[in-house]
Image (cartoon, rainbow, N blue to C red):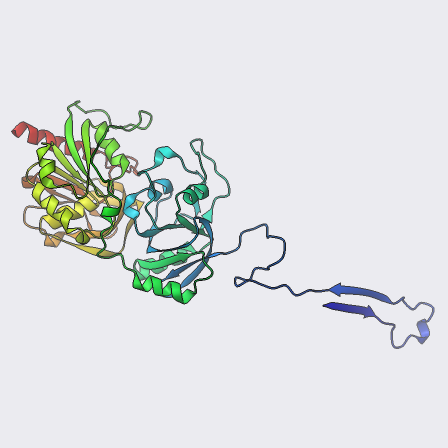
Length: 426
């Protein structure tokens, strides 16, 4: 379209004939440009910035447009928020996040890159990552890869430039929500909403998908440059069988650093085979999902408790609660973060803990003799158990994660002491 604009002589120009301005003519050319569905112009030079190309559709009907990084496609999962300021790589590789989108409340993510030393498992199990701002540069002496490249190679979807504060408020108000993350423009909002409302994580066995397939020996300890709390270890060696419900590698490193010989077994490993190994103790690890969805694991725990020293962490804590006759329940939005205060009733101290769970043990449902040793100070939920008559102890949070930095590491020493006492009885 051409638009001509001209300036004309004044209507009353008789007195100003000699000084009349010359006629000026200029042309403004405008052209219509076709737009795509997201409002971006097509057929032009590519913009120097990324435009919104992804949607997060929640089951409550809200739609959040964002920019994608990592893998592309469509994925469904439960949306939870994590309040950790650092440690996003440990979160990405924590098997307990299987089936979930993790929203980081800390706005700036990716600035330290990734490195292979900080991984908690051999792969990423979470459904996707939701962040406010993706760092455009990396500044860390240990980094080997950017976060964007790391997720793309592992086929994990991520989005950024989305209002994570608003989504977090929604999750705190309404509880954890199922969501669908998609970069596919061919799928309508209605289709994505239907997917979110027909998928559920409750009652699904997620452990079998993250557990190892066969037993193996673990020998790696915490690196010398990172080791701590080494005083007071008497050098005595204990054989521990660790059930892999989605175990984090740092749990194994801490056990090895305390002098344990460790055999890791799959989640379906029979209790009879474990007892044939004559271990000094058994660890029931962390893992994803609903403890009520894995009755086979509860039966395994029942067959082992009382026969050897037992230590449960996170999912292992919940399975111990059920095996003792207690009940577990789904929390409104769970605990996910590295800044949860926990009171240790045995010594009166408050520990800063790392937590990642959507279920908790109801202490009122536990039998007589079971002691609640720890409580979460944010909501009063049960964070630790002990039953001396049955030789067991457990924590709902992660003592190996060290956000305090090392507030809870001494619990591994308590497990050593429990095994030592049982060995002396024999």
